[in-house]
Length: 163
Image (cartoon, rainbow, N blue to C red; front, side, top):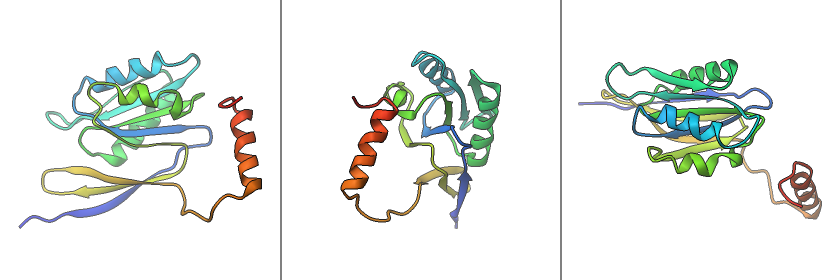
């Protein structure tokens, strides 16, 4: 009889670092994700790591920043689930690259795109490990009021996402 072990992996990005965590299906993903992020916008710094799911089962990695590439590898090793990829960004938000990443032909799903601390919920069986889901951020505390709406609108304009 087989069993399933559940655990969570804590990913705590440093200030100013954004994450995109997803699942792909082919070793070529690491190079395609690198090319996608590199061509998305100027001055983006990033690292990409991909958990190979067969053969030598290595974490494959690329990046434009040695620091962020190492961080992506660290997070991928913590997750250690087949075909999972981690993109770590600086000088960009996930919104700047997310649709392009989702359009990479090997990408099957995106679990999260955030700058928040996240917990990755993992299931481990005799076969290996898989991501069941992601806890992204804190529990909802209420509903915005008019002051909160004003603050949201001002914030989006201050960072250049609305005019």
